[in-house]
Image 1 (cartoon, rainbow, N blue to C red):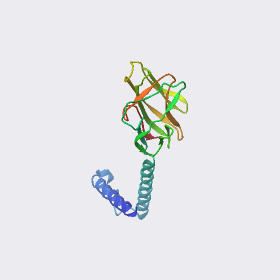
Image 2: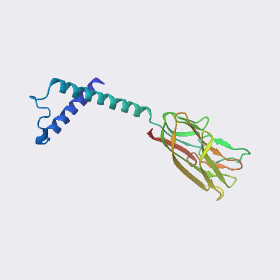
Image 3: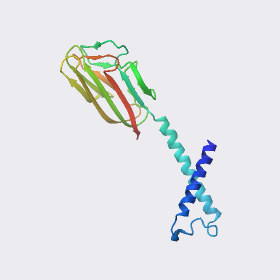
Image 4: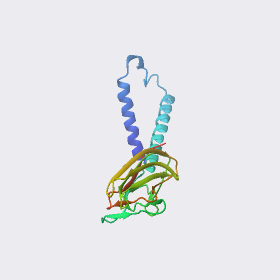
Length: 198
């Protein structure tokens, strides 16, 4: 940590030297040894140190807020139909390909936002044996967007949306009653990632 700080300070000093060598005649007094006091140097060093610390905090926070997940509905490669059911059913996408931040739970099908931010969420589904597919992305129980297809078995739909989520918001995909979906470990998927913390 200390060695990276020293390297950074040397780079800043080099940049200040480069900038000061290109200043116009009006700025000739900048860092002039005859006119620059020790206090001026102390103030500049204090400002640079504060900025370095701020940048390090931002970098650490950025590392904590890396979030991305992607999962397919089933783990096996056989044509697998799911539904129709008599009630609305939360889909549990079990074949996890990516789960940076571990915010997606493949046991429940829920994504829980670990940080407040702007997220991009998408899900895709293929029509199962019922001949129609109607499913929705739910945020804390509220329908945010849906896919719908009635072209018979093996048709598909996909939809996505940018959503601002609060820390702890929960997302899931609900298959409405009487509908069905199928997968082959890579066709019906649920994906999301953090675009930017807010």
